[in-house]
Image (tube, rainbow, N blue to C red):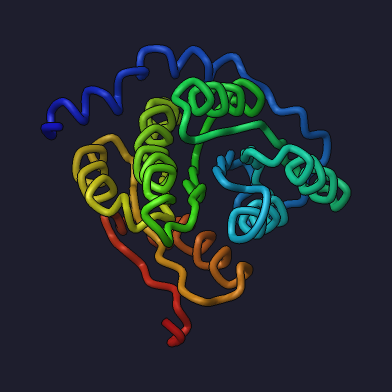
Length: 228
């Protein structure tokens, strides 16, 4: 796919994003104040591991969090415990292998919370054999592409934002999107967590998402703690 065609596909839904963003409202009555108060964060693969830890950390820092995954029971439990701690989070079903599922996930989150500021594209599966290759490609590469495709219009409509990828399979996509959408205020970076606790990786995500790194884009950040 050429650069021009990739940009056209990624940005194909821009015309509808502004209307969705304008129509949404938050359902949160009380949220803790924090570094990300007023921000809306979207997380794929948020029902366990790094995605769950990031959802909890963003909510604790005041963000409104929409997170998705295929494991509904786990997602509902994470949602319940975050809300029990007075954080604002909503679980939405998501399968990043399916375009319609990704579009519905992103659009539903924006309808509920009114905008999109930060997207952590964390959904991924291990690939350790030839038999796992097809599902790995659909999840770890195409899933990242689909997530960006439907997130970018909403980030642009919000005046800019940040996408953080957690998939080595998407490094070229991250660099291309970073170069093409910087002029519209969107940063795109990649996190490469090694064998570190999920909370440590989540802390790196929140660090990257902060305003302190407002000029960092197109970067790949290893978080291995010297272990990997």
